[in-house]
Image 1 (cartoon, one colour):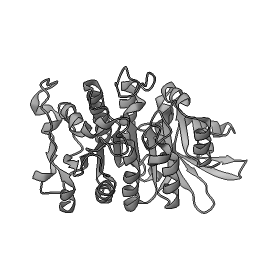
Image 2: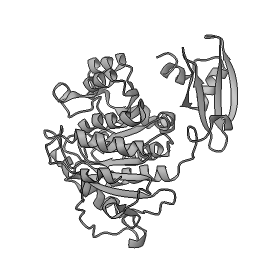
Image 3: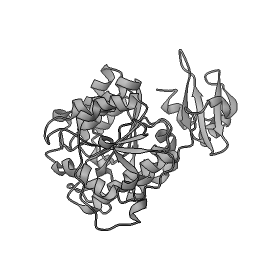
Amino acid sequence: MEDIKGYFRKPEVEDLPLHYIDDASDLSSFISSHSSDSTDDFDVAIIGIPSAWGSQKYNPSTADAPDAVRKYLYRLCGDFHNVKIVDFGNINVQNGQSPATPIADVVSILVEAGKKVVIIGGGDSCNLPIVKGMSQSIGKINMVKIDSLLTLSGMNEIETSGGLLSNFDEIEKIKQVDCIDVLGYQTYLCSDDRIARADDQKICFTRLAMVQDNVQNIEPLLRDNDFFSISARVVRNSDMPSCVAMPNGLYGEEACHLAKLAGLSDRSSVFYISDVYAQNETSLALSAQIVWHYLHGIDHRYNDYPTNDIRNYRKSILFDTRTNTEVKFYNNPLNGRWWVEIPGRDTSRIVSCKESDYEAMAKREVPEIWFRHFMR
């Protein structure tokens, strides 16, 4: 990792007077600085983006988020047993300058080396260079975006900065993303035209109400994520004050739970929290807790498929009369997780699913997972 040290500068983290736990047990005691660690013996790299590139008009303070979030993150419990965490510092870029190239380079190097990457701060526009960096190392990826808007850029900047739809056009041209899931969007913040365009491009999106109705229903989507991105504006203002009025949204504990489920995924390699409002201490504290829950998920992974051979699980075969196809379901009895082998024109693929998908097919009904994959 010596070749990427030049991309970073040391963070400047203010000491938090309030200590929740003993100093010896907080996260700062378990995190190494890469500048002082001469080995590559680590599992997770923390990176800050001290830039409001693409977000200057609506949240310039997000440039200050990396060090401000660290202030609270370092004081949370750090007693992780299965992961070693290194803080690389902040991308060495001036606020307002594009951090796209160094972000893509750093993510590519770390992901190719098999490391997990946690990225704090920066605006929504940084999602695209993260995707580019990942694709350079592992090819096609699944992206899960937790957001109140159908956008990957600044609000009201869909055409000028390049939002989800225009960026997805670019992604499609170079085949970087296999699937994008947008979870938590609010219908009254998204025009029918934008929703229709997203649907035409086969972007899967789930309304806020459906996410909140039963978080476990979307667990398979999170289990199949390679890149988990959450915008702080998806959380309601009462839990996470921001520079824009968002009276509705996820509760803080729901955002933390989604982050933990994403961290539990054996596929997930990059986490990104964007649009943090760095001028409010409650927002910073909750952002730190969201990051902590993702790290907690990594520390408690089940080592399921694809880490474990799918043939080690209980297999059930059902016959689909609509397609004259045998459909194979797999179940890990130790944790109740399910997978299904989706037949394709050239080859089949294995995706995460729910037990209810198996039960639906057993009753000769069309399972929910079929609409997502087989009928795309």
